[in-house]
Length: 105
Image (cartoon, rainbow, N blue to C red; front, side, top):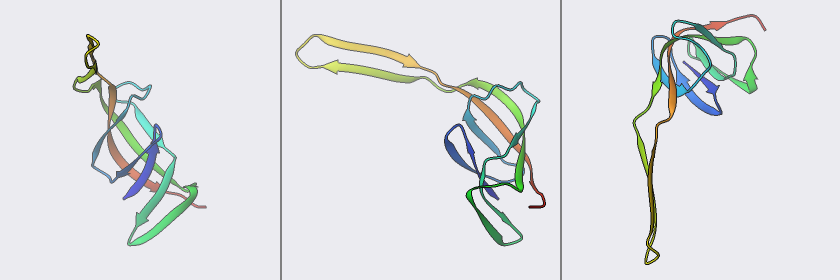
C-alpha cells in the first residue's frame, strides 16, 4: 500500500487496483512511473516521506483515457431575469497499478 500524489491530489494505491486521476499526457498502454510517493507500507512497516520517499516508486499502466459524466452548472439571480445553464465534462486517465518497487536509499 502506498499514498502517491498525482496532479495535486493524493491517492491510496495497492498493486492490482485501478484509479481514476486527472488527465495525464500518456497513451493507452504506456507505463507510468509515479515517483511522488508520500507514504508506503511494506511487511507491516510504515515509512513516511519528508515530503516524499526517494527509494519508493510506483509503476502503473494507462488503461483508459476519457471524459467523466457531465456536470451541470446553473447560475441564477432572482428577480433579475438572469439564468445560465451549461455543462462540463472533465477529462480523466484510468491507471492500473502494477507494482510498488522499493530501492536502496
